[in-house]
Length: 311
Image (cartoon, rainbow, N blue to C red):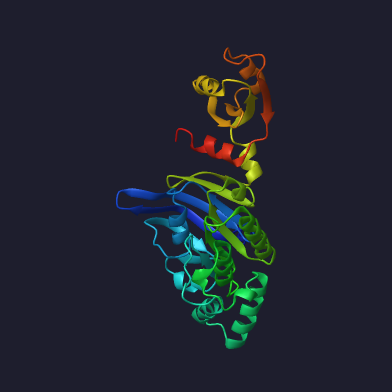
């Protein structure tokens, strides 16, 4: 590993493990996150995303392994790291009984901002996150999308170099989710590195790079395109009649990884050892002449299925 490469990394983890008694929550996680990127953790609830983030922010001691964040060794230098990172938890963690402005002032005091910097920064964030009209409103009375914007404003108040977001959009509607991601790209453009966990496939596809986690293990990582190109399967959609019966029959074929019904069609993942998956399916006895077979572009959901199937 070259010095230049090392310097461009904001997170480096080797063989990172965390056990809770007999439960292995994180199992030998290797991770490299490059500066200036949005890096995603994709996985279902309980896969270890939050545990990994808590170790990477210095809040939780690893059972074993090495981790450096912004070139600081954890957990030894966790206190020094705290001033350089922002952390937005899955559950709204600000004070319901304080106003928007009072919450931001409180956070500013925690990070030791001068009165002048605090005033200018809060005004800037109220404008950026469309909260100026809500400055005197109690945080507890706000909508999910407004709380989300306030939490992001609080997490970025001290201009952190690295931002951790733990399933930040789980309680908001699609429009607010889209707007939130636009704000993340703005932050990234300004030089903030971001690690975000999600179980939404469309959000994972927006990341520059991501890791797929399952049962505490990293099953794959790379750019969304790399993951889709290297997933070891081709995707064929089948439309026709009696799809429930056909799904059952196709699922028993060894070369087929999975079959899922999407409305009036089946999405079939065929191992890439089959060079012509459409012809392969057409040759199966249960496929009728009238049924339509089309090879389609893979999705991250397909990648997730191939990574975790049978593991």
